[in-house]
Image (tube, rainbow, N blue to C red; front, side, top):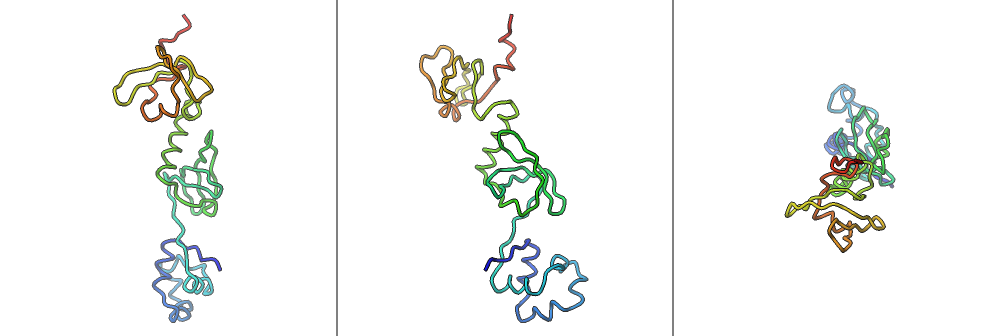
Length: 192
C-alpha cells in the first residue's frame, strides 16, 4: 500500500496521536474547533489510521522564489502561490507559463539544477542557446582579464579568436571566460 502524503503541519499532529487514542480523539467535538487540528478537518479516521500504520510521506511545501521540478523533469520557478495553485514559469528554451497544483510538482530543484536553469534563462533573455557564440562576441578571461573576440564559429562547438590559429572548444571556454558583450550589442562594430 502507498504511504499517505501529508503536509508538515499534518504530520506533526498525526505523530502526536497514538493509535489507542485515535477513535476517542477523532470523535471529540473540540477537534474541529481548534486551530491545531484545522489542518486535519477533511481527514477521515481511516486516512489518519493508514498514516499511523502504513506510514506517511511529508510533501515538500513550495513558496514564491522556489525552483521546482515537475512530474516530467522540467524545472520551474514559482512566482505566486494561492492555496494549492502555483503560478510561475517552466524553464525550457523559452519560459512557458506555469499554472498547476502541487500534485504536478515532484520536488525542489537541486542547487545544480537551479544554477543550470538560471544560466539557461540568462542566455534565453539574450536570444541565444546556452553558450551559443557568434562572430564578434567579446569574452573576458576570468583569471587574467584579457579580452578576446570570436572571429569564427565552427559547428557551434568550436570557435576561433581574432589572432588565434587554433579552434577552441566552447565547452572549455565555460570555465575560463565570461561574456562581456554580444556582437549585436557592440557599438564598435558599426556598418560605417
